[in-house]
Image (cartoon, rainbow, N blue to C red; front, side, top):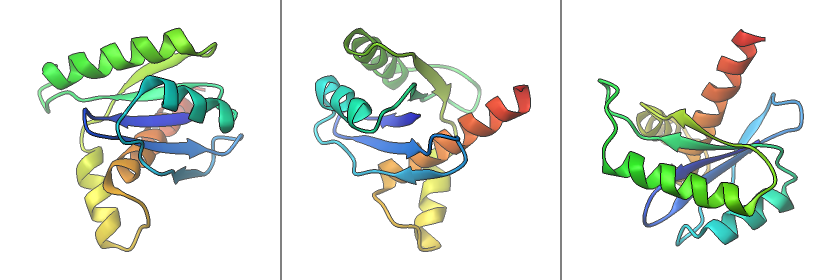
Length: 127
């Protein structure tokens, strides 16, 4: 699975192994063009793309959430695989903490990695 922390300047990216056990950050894509992300998904053999949905702590969606949804819809039109939105609350704070603790990768891609870890853990609980 490929996870994306979409922003208007760059898009953080992370990929899981085929079993969904390990997650690693990839290089961020600047600028965040849907065609480049679609190519990245194909290169890594992604079977699903998860796009972070930025919502406030109260659960409200703002302008960035609208932009993220539009980007996910554009990406879905370019790919023949599922594109899902997933709540990304607190992933930026988690990425900042990981970086302080020595994690390698740009902050946006570390946030995407935390997003994907959270997504995979939630799916595991549902199985």
